[in-house]
Length: 250
Image 1 (tube, rainbow, N blue to C red):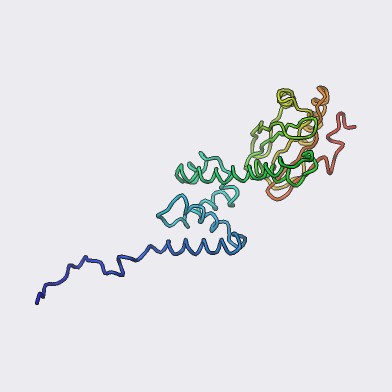
Image 2 (cartoon, rainbow, N blue to C red; image 1 turned 60 degrees about the horizontal axis):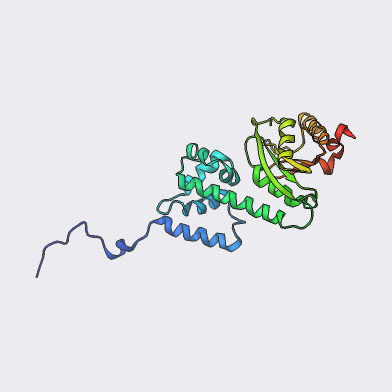
């Protein structure tokens, strides 16, 4: 009979098959998500679930919570520029690409819902608002989205022309007119975001809109609407102050 002791560093069968704690937690996150598609989950848990697909072998809850702390909410994390989330968020290139991919897919879905409608874009205000919000509504700087339309009011092209400071967007009517002429547009819709969360247009917004309407009118192009967008609201000048869009305030 061999009385020699077994090596102390030999793992038991139970120890060999034991999985890290975060594996079970990930399965529970997936189950919770599937139960109601994440409606009852806080932002950090939804982000945590997203991170599991970019970081397969690590507890990602601390990373998710830190990102929410730095960017305030899930939407801001996903729409942040890749370079920003890498530098400030401390995530890898793969993770930043995943965030940008999700945001791009949201934009594409919103746009296709709008573009596939037979009616002119102005008749689909809710979809226009959703699209503008998806493109620029979550930015922490003011950005200007321009949508160029043809004679039938259908989409031709779009651009984000200016990036302003945290509380101001700089726009040259001449540049907007040049863009409209280049795209052979008969009308345009513009939208800019208010990071403050207050969608009421400022006096500067009103004056800029009047100047733009007048400049476009000179070359026979109409300013159909100016939508001030926030993360949870909007102000349509066509709906609430149409006189602002009229050349010379008519």
